[in-house]
Structures are given as C-alpha cells and as structure tokens.
Length: 180
Image (cartoon, rainbow, N blue to C red; front, top):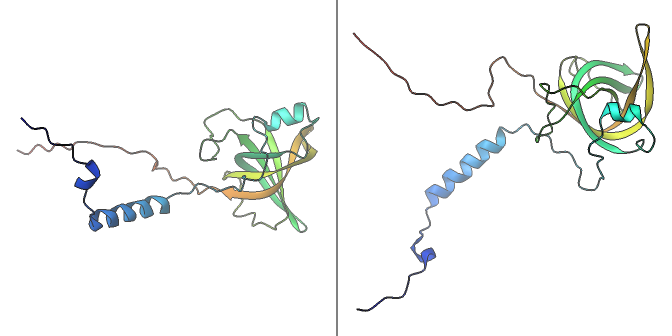
C-alpha cells in the first residue's frame, strides 16, 4: 500500500471573479450605511474617564485636557462670531454615540468658533464632540447658580434624527398562512 503525499490546500482553491465582485459590492453597501464619526484622535492624548460632573467637582489638573464627550443638545445660541451649545452629557458607546438610556453624567457647554445653524443644532439632537476643556463657566438657571465645563470644540458630529422605527436591529421570522 502506497501513501501519496498530501496535496496543498491552496492549490485546490480557484479564483472566482463573480464572488470577488459580490464581496466588493457588499462591503461598499455596508460601509455606505455607516454614520459613525471619525474623530482625529491619533495625535491626541484623550483624557478618558472624565465626565462633566468630575471636572466641575475637581477642576484642578483637568483644564486644557482633550476629551471626547457627547449628549443631547439642550440649547444653542449664536454669540457674535461663535456658537455656544449647552449639552446634557451621556456616556458614549463604541461608535462614539451618546447612550441616552444610561444615566446622565452632567452638563457642559461647547463653544465653536464656527457660526453654526441653531435650527440644525436644535434641542433634542444627539451630538458627539472632541475638544479641549477651557474653563468652568458659571450659569444661572432660574434662581440657582450652576457651573459647567466649557469645551472648545475641535470636531463636532451631529447624529441623524431617530425615527420611531428602530433600524439598528435585525429580526428574522417565519410566516405561516392558513387558508380555508
């Protein structure tokens, strides 16, 4: 009985241009649906673990640090040649989108050197921002004084409005039809 030497597996694979084209189309389709922001953080030392509450509670050593925060817009206003946006902060998920089902982590104010459209950056919209903590800004709401971190924005990402129908989950089902 003779034993033949094993044949290489790679030799049995064949090139199929149709499959390659299908794979390229699927990857293009999937990447076209992505709305994840791409923040330029490669050269930055992002201070992780900082929240607006922590910065207000102990601002020493936290000013001038770069952070990546997000949340829900509460108010926006154009002030001369800049825009200020007040945000209710939430933790970010892996795609840097605010997770509004989690507990809020405080409030902060974004200052953008660009004049933004306050009808677009409207209350209720989600956004994520990369920026530097500039100072602690006093804010008066009614009869109470508050203090919020002021963030000088380097990059902003306004998330698309959510529809009532969830599109981010996949569902499978079996249809059964009964006829008389």
